[in-house]
Length: 178
Image 1 (cartoon, helix red, strand yellow):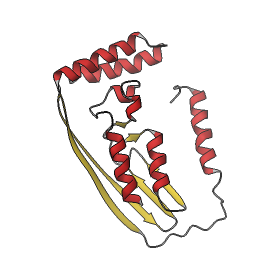
Image 2 (image 1 turned 90 degrees about the vertical axis):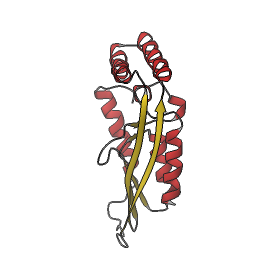
Image 3 (image 1 turned 180 degrees about the vertical axis):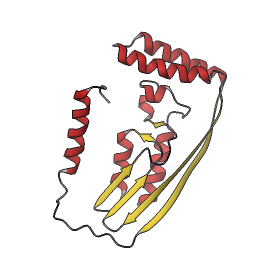
């Protein structure tokens, strides 16, 4: 995201339209041999009190360096989340999704908001004419970010999911859809 205003809405909308403009409307879509496959990615992560304090300190630094009030507010939300879990603890991530294969089209669902580079990698791994990836499906485990962004954005600052986990999930899904 590059903002939360009308210009950002237009930018995102234009990006979606650009992705869809290559689809020929008159083209027949072969929908046959329908297969439904469910998948599960489960792991447990433990955060210590010291790790959580380090996260809280980092978020406070992000708030003090915020370029504007919007950024400050977003990181303030991350801080509230982290402070509620100040003592650390165990987080069980249990991602359950579906792969729906329908001839020329394949849909992969995930109950999370995945940074776009991962959704694109999963779509590229699909060997179909019309690959689709749907995030935020059914429920949400939270944001899945790339390790280079760890702590730099609200999504990666306010999470129990350690850096590098999304890459593992993406590799797992890419293997499943091949």
